[in-house]
Length: 187
Image (cartoon, rainbow, N blue to C red; front, side, top):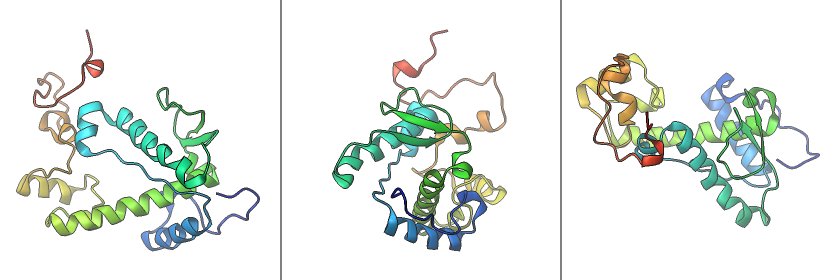
């Protein structure tokens, strides 16, 4: 967001805003932002490298596009949460940053609106999962849809394993995932 410019009224933690308000604010944020860059990681990538590393991968993908859009490299980045050892960019981590920091709240709103639009598009392709209402969160209706329809390519298989859902800690780990050796415990 541009320095010295008045904050957009209503910007807050995206979880505290209803969907319609987020959509309006996201449009205003995009109009005023110096740059908006999004990054993502697929369900398959999350299954392969875990949610932490997939989050870093998505952030790196977003940051890789910033220089062409901004005209220069970012010299410092704010992130929501804890420091990321492997981000490769100087950053300040702010726990609960979307509730404490204007720029992080703006990013949170744009990200949530983008994800909601993606989930609505997937709901059209994969009827029965109620993604247009639950945005992929594990509601009772979504779990029932999984029982009825099974998994799609957009489900995180490692997250949906019965052994994990039931917390059966003695269950064998999945064998069908191509997990890079650096992520496999040695003990």
